[in-house]
Length: 158
Image (tube, rainbow, N blue to C red):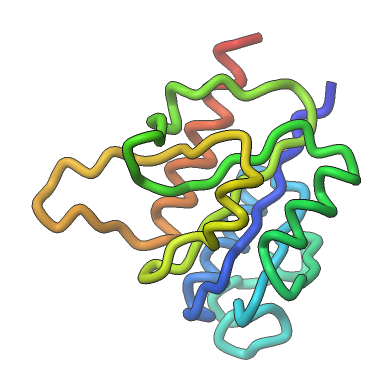
């Protein structure tokens, strides 16, 4: 079965972060990136510079909100939708069980997180446990760690 991963970006502000996530998406073979709200998307010049050509390799589209994107992804056959969001109900990304088939992971604005309506539609929340005092990590770094954790976990489950 296809192991595709779809990345949903909910109201990210920084074109540099989005460009970095395009590079990560290409590196992990993600199926596509969906930018929601005011998330910068190609051909934004700072994004394109940071993406270093990966914006030409990774399929992308935009939606007004992450909730609309998740609803459409379900209609298109996404098996599960996970939100990368810390909290009491969140599971470390490397402990979650990821099903075969297409899954989506929603990453949110660093200050606002993911829209509450989108979290309500998700099948679960995953996180990177924050062990330091600042308890904060850049969204691009978080995306890299979480996406590789998903790939590793799926490979273990085979």
